Length: 150
Image (tube, rainbow, N blue to C red; front, side):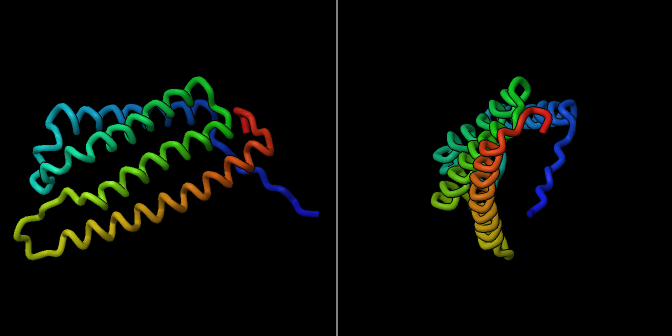
């Protein structure tokens, strides 16, 4: 017979605080990227950034919306589903950034493009692993019918 260990979740109050913080950070990022000072102030971003910006905005907005929904509906299976949505939009964004590569580091003697490519590879791989783990978690949560307190 196999013993099943239940993973401890933080208290509802702690989770809700985290959801508010996450949504607030997302809203601040949207403001900083799109309004003031705007992505254009970063000298290493090219005009091609505008072609991926909509997907960056979708990814950040998905995170905001999911975290706000968690405030009202905080059950484990839904948190797993929301995590998949956030990770999936993030992965789509990373893949588009890889494809477009809207960076220009000028005549820097350091190989920044290689560093950015390595970071993107790590982020893409981590997101892919996160999606697999999220699917496993969702299947486990739906099968176990975990509730808000679980």
